[in-house]
Image 1 (cartoon, helix red, strand yellow):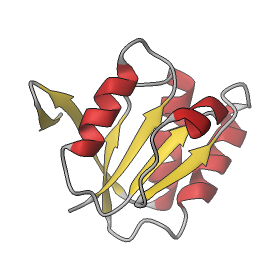
Image 2 (cartoon, helix red, strand yellow; image 1 turned 90 degrees about the vertical axis):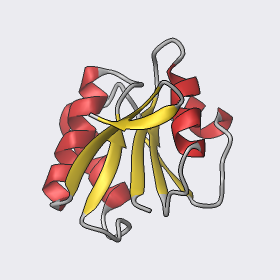
Image 3 (cartoon, rainbow, N blue to C red; image 1 turned 90 degrees about the horizontal axis):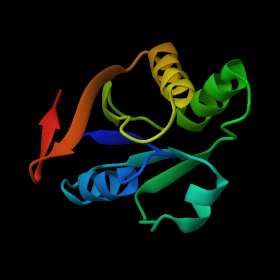
Length: 118
């Protein structure tokens, strides 16, 4: 199975969708882009790597931090990406970092009790 990149930040009810998405597949690796609260609170599993960001940081610094957290750790040429949680700034940083790493992006969400590619 592919690798999953998710943003776990703000948004009412978004943590539930992220948790269901994670549980719905046998992901090789799961990269969670989150803040300090998410890092301390979200239920960790062995195949998860947390990339802790400061959402108040500049966009350039967010991109660099996410890119550094993912660089050399993605084994395939494509990742599944979920951005249901978080802010536009966090979404832009994640997209930019992934594109700079040269990986393909497949947008996924958990809808009607299953994963849907968007």
